[in-house]
Amino acid sequence: MARLTITGEDVFYAQRLTSDAESSTVFIHGAGGTHRHWGHQIAGLSGTNLYAPDLPGHGRSGGQARTSVTSYAEFLSNLLEALGSTRATLVGHSMGGAIAQDLALNHASQVDRLILVGTGAKLRVLPTILEGLLNEFESTVDMILGYSYSEDAPQELVDLGRQEWLATTPGVLHGDFMACDHFDVRDRLREIRCPTLLICGEEDQLTPPKYSQFLQEQITDAQLTIIPKAGHMVMLEQPEEVSRAIAEFMKTTGA
View (cartoon, rainbow, N blue to C red):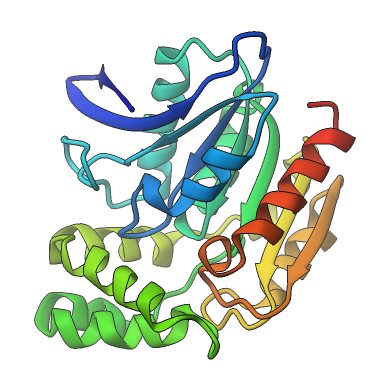
């Protein structure tokens, strides 16, 4: 666990360093999330320096949460510079996947590979969710949770997700979902030239497999892994399968 000050903001991040590693991998959580969503991957992967920040205004990080994917991508670009990483593999879930795509498109020199988990090139959010996060926060969180996990997800996992989201202020979560709603890079995907792995839960209702299939069709060097018995929070529901897919991709692409 470590902290950095980036453009005046106190940033918390989990890390697992390998003494002889020449590469860096940065995990980016989704809307309302924290570094804890990547706990299994941070513990289990090797051969690269691993970092998982809490985005500004989230978890243990200070600063101001953003309301656009591009603003979060600018933050991440600054974080990579502060970590001394010239190029990194980016692993992004949901909104984090949008941030990773934005960085690959607008700061391509900093991106070695992409691993996009449960995300899409466009992330439209229902108006009822955007309104509800400001006016009926708790019941709206419960509605989102109903879409976030597979039917067989352990109840304790769902309860932990609920606890985490309710600990996030309505303004931060609403801003994250607004950032998602405004995100659309469908017409730019062919500009992404780095090796890309797409991971999606077979039962994902928020970013269903067709989103990842579209990404695979549009990104030149992309491969797709669909994980059975998992919903949108695939890296929490099937952590070993997700870690295995990431490790194999890293191995075959030179990590």
